[in-house]
Amino acid sequence: MATPSPFAFLDDFVSKVTRGLQPPAWVVEEVQRRIVLVVNHVLMQESEATSRLAKQAGRVVEARWRVFTMRLAITPAGLFDIASAAVAPDLTLTLTEESPWGLAQAALRGDKPPVRIAGDVQFAAEINWLVENVRWDLEEDLSRVIGDAPAHAIGEAARRATQALRQFVARSPGAPDKPGPVTVATPEPTTSPQAGS
Image (tube, rainbow, N blue to C red; front, top):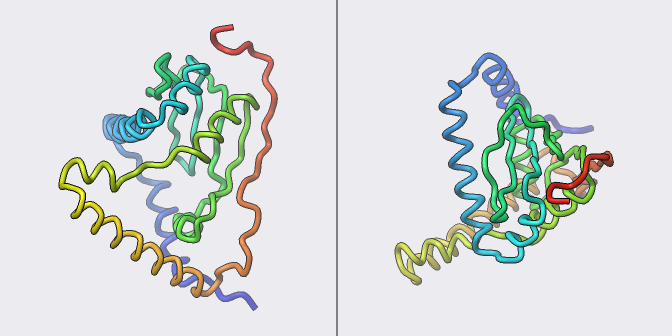
């Protein structure tokens, strides 16, 4: 018999709040711009990532989760920028896990969240390559600000805390015995020509 999650009330609460709460457009735009800055910072540290993305210049990817949507355009420099809502996306990635608690548990287990993919297959392969190969070395960035030793100590503490959380989640009621499939891919081929062709 499956034990219900002790955090089910959080899922209900978040669902009710997000249904009735719509932040002002300027808040949404500022949050999205901050996300783009962080993502571009990470990409600029990986020349292979920016060169691969530069080949996709002009393409638009849309990410969705619940009521939240974000459209990003690829720049000629191989970075991301906010895309206009009027532009049709070449690729749509929809996070199918509705529960914030479920997403947090999957992240702590090291699983990828389930994603429904629709759009250009080649573009999806490039985005997947980024997800698989690009990592943010937060400890390196911290060392530039506070020095090597303190950054290493913070990084070590974060790794220990993450490991403890993963062990807690693995022992929690409702934790799966084995991770199931984490990606639902249903790419649909498009007939539109690739940008720059």
